[in-house]
Each structure stands twice: as structure tokens, then as C-alpha cells.
Image 1 (cartoon, helix red, strand yellow):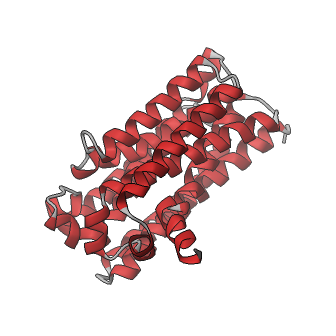
Image 2 (tube, rainbow, N blue to C red):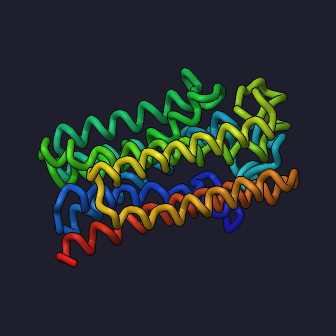
Length: 290
């Protein structure tokens, strides 16, 4: 039983929650609400959405993950079809909670888009198999839709929607660059199953260069937002995460060890958390009038 529980934990891919939950909190603060219960509600919804998306992704990637030697405990203790049952149960729980919380039509649309994106990413269109659609899908879920999960729980104001849209756009661009890191450790299995990730399409060196351009472009966009007054100068602290991103790229270039490459992916997720934490602190200080 203990090993089966560990297998479930592997299926859930918990590090992703380090990214999406703070993004929801950021969107919630941008909406202007101070209702902690509403924030908890949107956080539970995004946790269920993230877990369900990862369960169906693990279902779709069962054979590839075996070849890449990922989630070994899950493969030893669970059957592939059991993951599909888990996914359906999670969706039912998600829909019940959204219904009981009297979600607005905007929030329902956001939930529906996240569920649809998760399905298209893994088992229908299989966006995950082709760059750059795979990275666009991840960035759209992590940086854009998760932000609006929190925002639409907090506010329905169209003026605030347009006021804050630079933030999820920056998060989208940043996550688009960061998301490529996950593929460096999976080239053997991905190549065997015909996946068209960026490292396979243009090689590790070319992929790192493209990643550097995308990440730099995101922070150039941030700089322009600050210069033209769309965001306050406090957001310039975010360039700390840019320095960390460059370090992760250098670290990734310096090794072909799969364990170290997977650690680089975790570091990229932590860097995304750092950027979100900085923005949350900026909004909290602004709400406090500091």
C-alpha cells in the first residue's frame, strides 16, 4: 500500500503546483479581492486541474516514461488504465466543487479551457509531441489561464482585465522559454516514439540558443512595460529571475547527465516560482499602500 501511495504521488507531478498555485494567487490579488475563502476556492480548483492534467499525461506517456526511466514506482505499483479512472474521478470532484462555489461564467470558461487544453495536450491532438505547440500549451496553462483562474474568482471588472493583462502576457512569454528545459532529459524515449521536441528538432545546442532568445525576449518585453509605465519600477526586481534563468541554461549546456538535466527542469520551475513570489509581494505591498 505504501508503494502504491508513492506511485500516486509520482503521477501527480507535485512540483508543477509550485508554479500554478502562486499564479492563481497573483491573478486573485490583481482582481482586488481580499476574501481568503475565494482564494482557497480557486487554489483548490487549480490544484485539481493540474493534478488531473498530469495524470492523463502520464496515462498517455506510459510506455515513453518506462523507456526514459521516469516514475518507476508508479509503473511498478499501478496499472495504466487505473490512471484513466483517477482522471475521471478528479474531473467529477472538480466539477462538483466549481458548481458548489457558484463559479461565474468567466471562471467556468477558464476551467473548461484548462480541461480541454489538458486533453488536447496529451491524448487527442497530442500537442505535446510537436514543438512549439507543446511549449505554447504549457505556457498558456501555467502563465495565462492560471492567472485568470484567480482573477475571475476575484473580479469581473473589464477595466482591471485590460489593466493587468501585461502580467499574464509576461508570464506566458517567460514560461514559454522555461518549459523547454523539461525535454533535455527525455531525448532517448522521445526520439523512439517520434516526438518532435525542440532538442530533437534542432539539437541541444540550437535548442539552448532558441531558449535564451525566448527568455531574453520575455524580459525585454518586461523592460518595455516598465519604461512605458504599464508596470511600476518595482517590477524591475524580476530581473533577478532572468539572471537565474541564464545560469540554468549554462548549467544545462554543461552536462548530459539525465539526473542533472531533470534537476535543471526543477530549478526552472523554482525560478518561475521566484518570479511569481516577487510579483505577489509587489501587489501585496501596493494593496498595503507601501
